[in-house]
Length: 419
Ligand SMILES: *Cc1c(COP(=O)(O)O)cnc(C)c1O
Image 1 (spheres, rainbow, N blue to C red):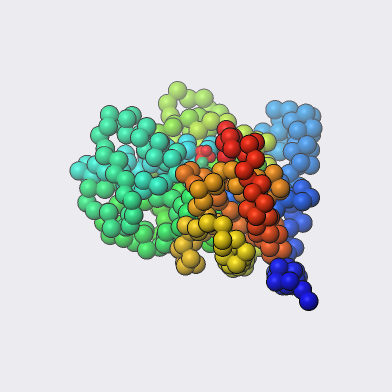
Image 2: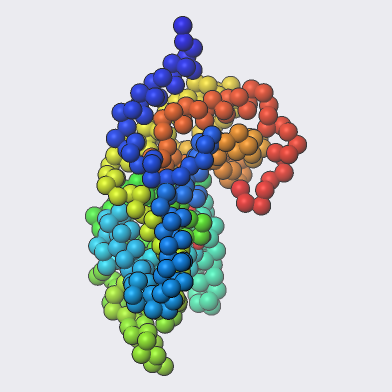
């Protein structure tokens, strides 16, 4: 007679064998004995990255030297990698550029959108966002407002941002998938309501790109930015990206008017003249090695259907939730993520009084998620390399850690600098 646990594992093995995305796991180098549930924070290492960087360093940098800006086409990397991201996010290839960090890109498009809005209707004086938005989005909004002499009100809503659009709101800064709860906005509906109210939306896609079908064009998005190092697997601190719909590009202001966004940077003219297309949203010299690593991360999505990816992401998360209920029900975890698929991204977060210590004990045993304030254990599901058996094994470890109280050890009580 097999126990319920071993029966579940056998079922998961069958799910892995039938998984249409199983081929993609080989595209990553994952350490033995680890279940990685934090690809939403730092994507795993693609199998090609190390060699690609080494070759580039030795040959293109070491031998080609400065000639490689032309000969290896380094100068076109932000545009080329941007077009790969565009294909993933349902945008045209000339609408996305890989550049800078998400925080800086939010600055560029939010400040630009505010200048545009003030030219069109100077009475719109509200920047709208959500109190639970990722802090950098709120900090950047505050910094921009201070730069504009606090000419705006930063209005933060606790829920239902769609009902807060009105004729005072210049720009709404909205993160599609909430980093804490995994709750997801309906992009098409929100864009439509914003458009009807005359409000422009700036999207932060950090927790949605590479995890859910985004479809920027189809859903009527005009402006967006997001991270390269999360689901896109670009490596720690990878370049971010920025999206400006083609219809908006020609008139869009560039508050960080650096020379790489100039129409002819190597003419070295004293006056700034922005490049006509998406290139204008660059600021300074691109980080070539980091761009190449991001390219390797994006290549892990080759021949992957976003619909299949989404389907597996939901199956993995539903399975995790079900096993948590069945095997860890008595330990006081409360899932704070929406149950409904249509409003959930690719993560689950569980509230627990001892979340921080429990997460450290899990990481110690190779089940890597993360802790988020104030009391959340966060688990991300990355369908390219996660297996159903990984989910099964992770919940088994959570059960063990709770049953034997391993999280109570003194060394797990102190929070680390980066959680
Ligand atoms: C991770 C994340 C960021 C990070 O911004 P960086 O500039 O890359 O540090 C920004 N916004 C959201 C919503 C995020 O989840």
